Length: 242
Figure 1: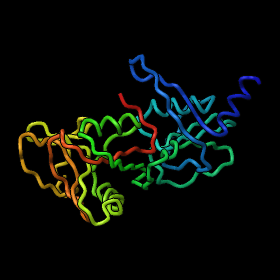
Figure 2: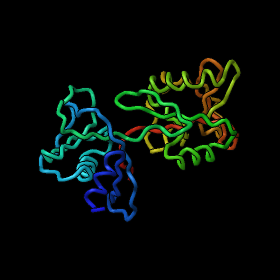
Figure 3: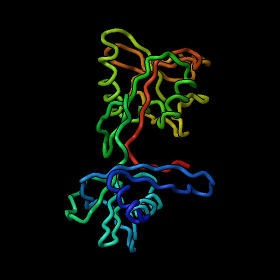
Figure 4: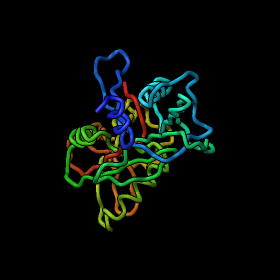
């Protein structure tokens, strides 16, 4: 089969590109799946001719590090990069759009702002480092409670799991000095107590966070060697991490 026909057949169902990140010599696989969704008026157009869907994807990731969709018109050689999906549809039968792959088996999908998140509860008790390693090896991380909406989603997910019993679940949170940080090194917001009510012992060894409860889930600190269940999170978005 000619190479062009092979690539065309491949793009009918899935999209794959190997993209060199920054100055690193490490290549990563970035996957997307075809969707019937049109690009939005809030998407950004690449101002030059783009000759393929793969080039469109690469150009989009070169402009911003996070996208929720990209769209390509083969006839017009036009590429739209969508980091904001709130606009009106740009209706045309020529558009082919791609979104991040669906949540993996075992994950539950939730709508979250412009994208979707995938959550997976793991009941096997693990230390904080073990839980973090599991989630990251699966393509995500421990859930990051960085907004009230995220805490509400986590509560909705954990309520039937707890089923009236008290559970302890590791979430992202590492204490350095007197400050709490997420795994990417960013400091937790000053109003974090409003996002997840804090109940801290201020024990010098309790440097990591869990949620604790049966019907409400405030945030408690604990030593990282204790074994608890944990909650993994993945985002349905195209992202480059350096």
